[in-house]
Length: 178
Image (cartoon, rainbow, N blue to C red):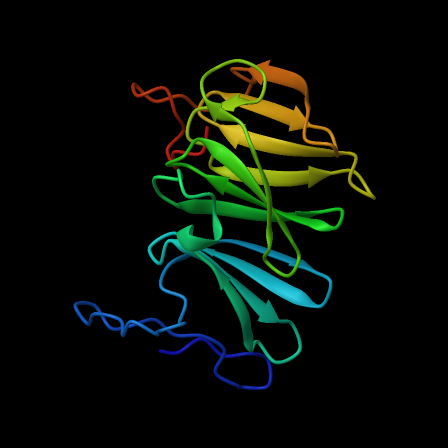
């Protein structure tokens, strides 16, 4: 079955299993994170290795952020979550162990972090959450740790092994989010 909007209008589809997408295919293949802001819908597409920016009113594709929008030394782009924080779009990239920052139109601004366990270092970040209204912090969720970022992208607090997080023998929760 195709997903339906409240009015019964088709809103998205993916290629059938085993059907390769066309090179110019802008369909969302495997949505993993969604954020809304500035009249746009932002969808992290983990199997499409991109972030779709859609017009909120019509769901028309305005832009697709791909690896080619990032600095040339970037090895891969694997968006696991997206968040609108202030006037910026933040993207958690598990493969690059970074948080990418874009304008709300999809223009690259900067990279935050690298692989590691120190401040502003991440180990496969999987989730983002703006905290407060208006947002005062951006929470970055990674394996066994939460990190709070300030609006300028600095780390303000790290919480190691937060209480209440279900651990598996692999050191993460059942959904690989912590």
